[in-house]
View 1 (cartoon, rainbow, N blue to C red):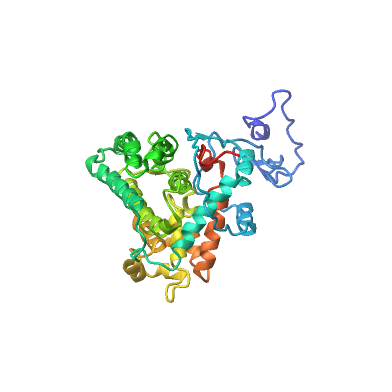
View 2: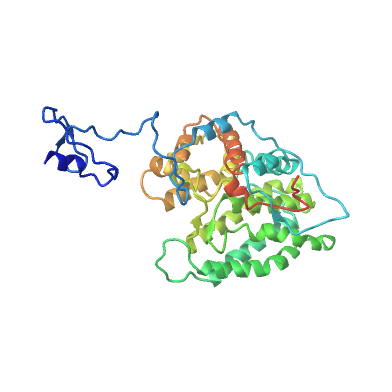
Amino acid sequence: MEADRTTGSPHESTESPPQPPEPHHQHDHTCVNCGGPTSFPPPPTWSENTPPPVYRPIRAPAINLPPNNNAQQTIILTPVPQAQKVSVVSPPYHFQTPTKMIHSEDDIRRFRESASSKNYLGFVVALSESIRGHKISDPCHMSPTITAIISILQTLIQFVDEIPPLQQSARYGNLAYRDWHSRMTENADSLTLQFLPADLNSATVELTPYFTDSFGNSSRIDYGTGHETNFAAWLYCLARLGVIKEEDYPAVVSRVFVKYLELMRTLQLVYSLEPAGSHGVWGLDDYHFLPFIFGSSQLIDHKYMKPKSIHNDDILENFSKEYMYLSCIAFVKKVKKGLFAEHSPLLDDISGVPNWKKVNSGLLKMYKVEVMEKVPIMQHFLFGWLIKWE
């Protein structure tokens, strides 16, 4: 009987069965298979000295990963990005179809040190500074280019009205989005030519790929910060061409980017776009990053509203149309159920920061580390003549 208990494991060696214990041994262990008494000790538990075997999952989990302390330390040690003037190109032009160049951490390191990376990030910081202390409704310079871009985004919103979602049971990824994406792509060149000067018409070969990749992926029916970065890169390319000027920056944020956000929220809700590479509760937001940067800049030195004000529903209701950050928080609370601290712990943590200037500088550093230095996001970034691979 004792031998049955001690040799009944399906994993025992085939060479020679273990000998039954001597009768005078004390049965002070429990068999892991049958639960009966046995003199054999249980298998060792894993510890730091004897870790379990290393294995590689088929697909690394993309959501609900706990905070990475190394990444947090990197963000803390990263200098606050500074605004830069965009260098405007001059003839002769050498426009080319942009391509993907980032495939590894080595490529990320090369990109991080390049002038292209620093100038693009400097452009984002300059946009952020241009809206500092301003409400969305504040008057600003409206050039014909800005007006045309807003009209283009409104046209894309109209496409959504003309292409209703299909009836399907899947939670994410309404297939009608592919029809919308196809129509947007087919019209991209003609829409861009509405505001490009005649001598820059040939720039569409380089501009259009950024534009068409700004609104999500039609195969995966998803959207994330990589697509948002492509839209910002499209605006940056227009600045490189001199089509968007520095005096346009406040309108780029308060008019163009606000309209872009309206379009993207429409697409997200109507076609149930899946968050691309979301970190779940550990991410800043399922879809966006830049409106939190621009929105926190708007609120710097505000007399009454502090970062903790996001927990006041009256403030969100009355001021979300004027401040992008509050608009983003209101949208998160609308689409996510449960306690805010549970579904958005990072945003909840940020609400404890004492002032908006610290929030803004922290988000700029986070954007550099968590977006611009991440292979899964930047592997889709495009490089051509206006944004060079150096």
